[in-house]
Image (cartoon, rainbow, N blue to C red; front, side, top):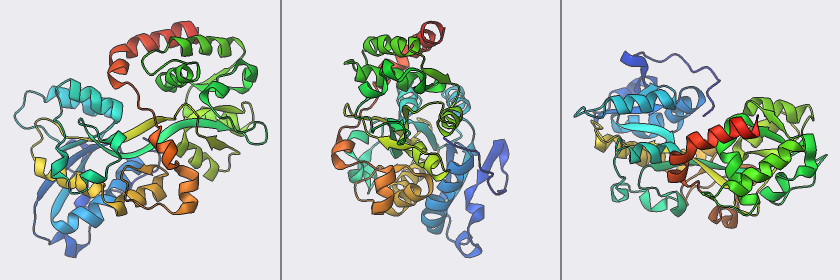
Length: 348
């Protein structure tokens, strides 16, 4: 999650927690208290927008006090593991990617979602209705390209073509998604990556560039060092807003989805509050606001995104239905091997 923009100073609580309720107006603060909801989340923009679009307009007026426990996801997952034997943990929700939500569920750290407790549960896009967490926002891995240099690529297969030579850019930190995308383009699957690894070695020998980060890749596009690659569609919109000459194309194989959401720790002290937060998160107004503010897509069917914005960040119903989820179990079990292959055979 991006977290580069400074957030306004909030009332400090213990352990780096901040009370989102303190940003509400005095009248709202006097609403009858319904209890406290402690939300583990990334900081920066995402935390600010949770407060702006969910907590202040929807939860605090109902009397909920919301505390944000801000930290990176590795630290928060480690904290959950350290607290697993406690009868009551320190958080009611944890914001994670879908892959991470799957992982902590498999580790026995979180509880299965009961969608019958969510009045908005039936509106969640079916492919994102996970038992291990509730999807909040999504984008997908698409082809990105310089329209002055490259015709719109129709597939991952076109992106991972040795003919691009050193005009193809790849991103080091995206090693998982890059191997899966290359595999889909080469006839593999989300759990059979060998065809993609073979194709990646071919493009590397042809001169494909490797950038250390998403930001470095964007700089390569801006400088026209590279003309083509893959990236989250939401990030390509941010680059367009920054003046970079880049467009996005959804691959015919089905774009790989990136989903961010929330899971409930097994020992959450306030499960009722957790479900109240999840329901507020799924409200169309909150979902629509995140699309405007962050460029990610709603995960509910009944959210309405303005047509001109949807044309930039969204997907057609057919593209949405063909989104590809990672094989989360395979990725969890094979991540070390995939990283070792990437570092030693591909990069080396």
